[in-house]
Image (cartoon, rainbow, N blue to C red; front, top):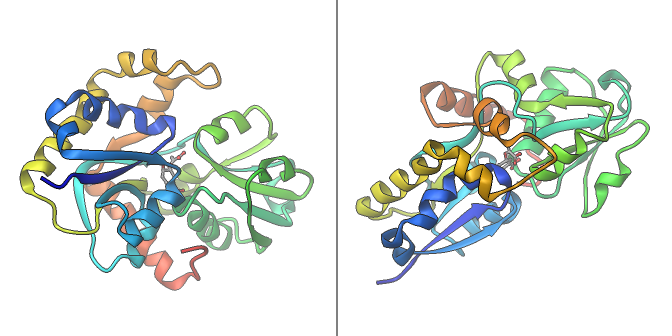
Length: 252
Ligand SMILES: C=C(O[C@@H]1C=C(C(=O)O)C=C[C@H]1O)C(=O)O
């Protein structure tokens, strides 16, 4: 049987979801698993290199066909900690914003927030690798993932994008969820969904497998990231997709 190609985000936030996938021999027989940063997963889902990916939701408008195949996501009900606008100056003094090349959702979320929440109009630049050292003076930057957890120790001003979205809309935010670009067998979907949930019931083991001195992973996995894709999250996701229709999306 042809293997189903699965693309997962290579950050710490995905480890609880991968825990059960890796432990299911039946599932591992059925799939080929690749891991990369979110912008790469988005590209692979669009060009068909993968069949299903933990994809940034901002890629949805670029897909001819898409199906959410799981009850799990990388979401947040309030501060997410790992997706922030980092700055040396308060937000009203920011002149330029560098956008993380690894992101597709958060960079667009930042654009929405700059316009509708902070109501400022700085120069926006799509950043290249190694841009984080350029976050200084009036130049701020969006950083996501593990590098953002690290940047929390560096930047004096930290604006959490999920927390800001919640303050603006009253809704949770969904950064990424399992999206397929074609119909997949229901038997696979059921197995895959169940495997995703296993690590969330074994967070202490997940944390033991991924020692990380920079940020408390128990807090990250239980208070910051919210993995259940429920009604409220879908509401938040749809509201964000509405904003994307009217805002000029960056790097989509
Ligand atoms: C919360 C996060 O969400 C991520 C942010 C994404 C994006 O901005 O495109 C995509 C996938 C998620 O893993 C994070 O990586 O810190």
